[in-house]
Length: 409
Image (cartoon, rainbow, N blue to C red; front, side, top):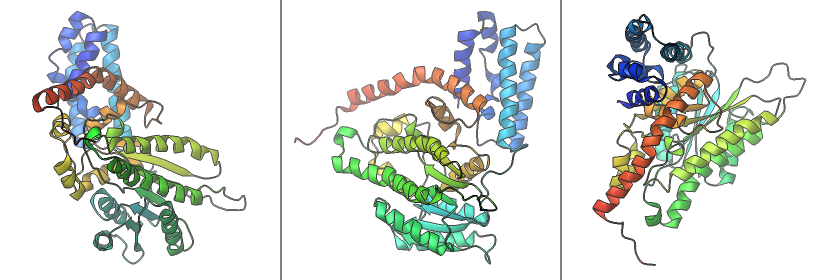
């Protein structure tokens, strides 16, 4: 993917003198740059990339480089060192300990939710799955049990419920609390929902409402039910404070960069992001509690829901999102859990998602001031080109294929 090289070209054109820009123009020697902010890279790859980068930079630095050039490369090297320390946990503790704790996963009967359940089970968590279909819940629960590391101590349970109903969410949390010896669950991960793509004007209003119900309201109802149990001040007589509880939303990179053809789905995901940002502030009101809010922003996930989505998706949408290479549920779950262990708030699962996040950070809480600021600068330069290009492609597609027909009112 040539994306980082395009960004570097923009920067060199803007701030580096012409003769120095010429030195940067070929760009192959900086092919290590994507690994600086790629969440998928392994430690050996990262070290190899750093070695290549240093071999590229040393000849430039040794020949009377200007302060501007030296500054750029110093920032890049500093970014590398800082990012490496964060990515691989040097000097940091695990901020998402799950062993012996109880985790509720909504939408846990298949796809990402099922993968999350299995991986948390591998780490020693007690698992409660929530979804509508009992047969799928039973199958997923057996998979989670099969992943357990301490079968004699870990416990497993499922609850069939319609989470679009707030009363059902309250029932779920009450049942989990009773099952968990009178204690509210420690972790709630919202994975429920599905995507029904289509052009806005061609989509029935009822479908628009259904998408908001199944995507946003399942998450909002669940969050409301658990926070009313969590956000209770700890009494002074309590000897040991509770370890942090975690509320995790599953969102989408479409909350950062909407794409034509996702009009029924994207607004609901944007609403989840807004709710998460708001809650990250509101929980500070409850001084004596320790609740952490996180949001995961995956791109395409290979699952039964994705297969159905592909059947409904307009051809234009498939063209516009060609850069999105779907990941497996297990891969997304693994990346998300590692990011939670680092204490991240906004979690993306691939480099393209990181760039999309950088273009739309706004007032959201940052994971890393240096990394997010740097990515934001690069992303905003990139989207000077990308945003007009998305509209241009939509125009040409309509010109070639004709305006979509609609039944007359």
